[in-house]
Length: 393
Ligand SMILES: [Zn+2]
Image (cartoon, rainbow, N blue to C red; front, side, top):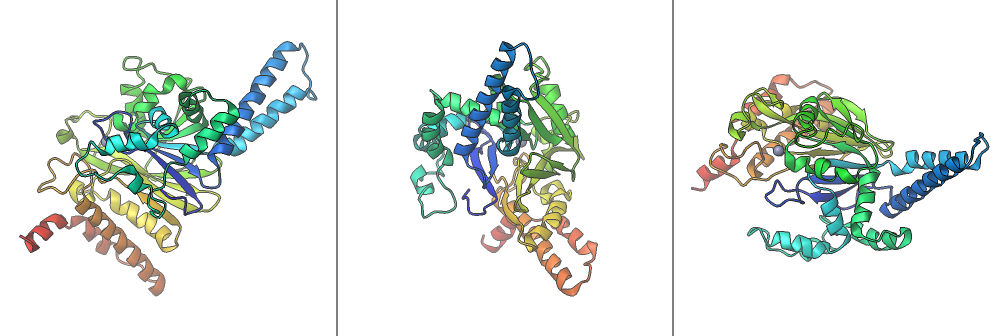
């Protein structure tokens, strides 16, 4: 995503649901005002200060308020709290593997992935052309070399591990492995406490099925759990706050999960999306994990979100929406497994447009539109695909 908003800098570490490991869903977010190289150097200096403080404290028998080691430690802590704590990982399907690839030979790695998919024949260079503002080459590539030289990381894996320890906040949309695997597999390098934000169903499933001392150790000293209810707003770090929204991600019987799943709500798998606010600029980013259309679930989860963010769109405060669309259009919804298709995505955005239009009409007329008019939206038996097929047999 281009750094054209002045608010959010989002790096896509992975965006697939398999079958290849190491590239599953994970998004690294920082405020655009912060620079990766500065963050790394600052973190390294802070860590060095803390190490010096520890060494000096253990080597002296007395400690007073004027002890220079105490001053150094408090300054380091202040620096740590004010500028380093700004990285957020949204979903955690991958982390170290993608960072290492980005620090080394990103283009050949991405090209090898693209070559696996018959509908993605373009080379990576076509996506990273400087005239194409839709996708920019990884900022981490340019960050890696000078920073590695300056702070002396011998290997890309050590630098990636440093990044992992600069991320204190994880926003997890749901507990499927392609959104959580790095929490488990990468945990051996975690040296700082990670706060995991998510719905109760997501956190309960993580504890019950991942960190349960059977699948993986419980790791109680590594993770703090911040359980949110749909609609809750929570401060993530000094730069961001988030609001979480529940969404639907497929019928449980059809995903094979059965009806005893911890994630079942209204007979469907509960996932979520996050509306993230940059507290410096008061701009917003809306980002989803896996999600299905209201016209499939017959629920109104998405409609409620569109209604909520339409205000922000009308006020020009919503910078971007990141949403999955991982299935092609199909004759039926039987094999979508709770995912979007292009036609359903268009349906959702048409609904969002209607919400915005109504908001503008309300502002202009200062009248409140009847609820029933919007409620009708979710009852439209959509498929644009079907409409298109009937028009163009
Ligand atoms: Zn999923």
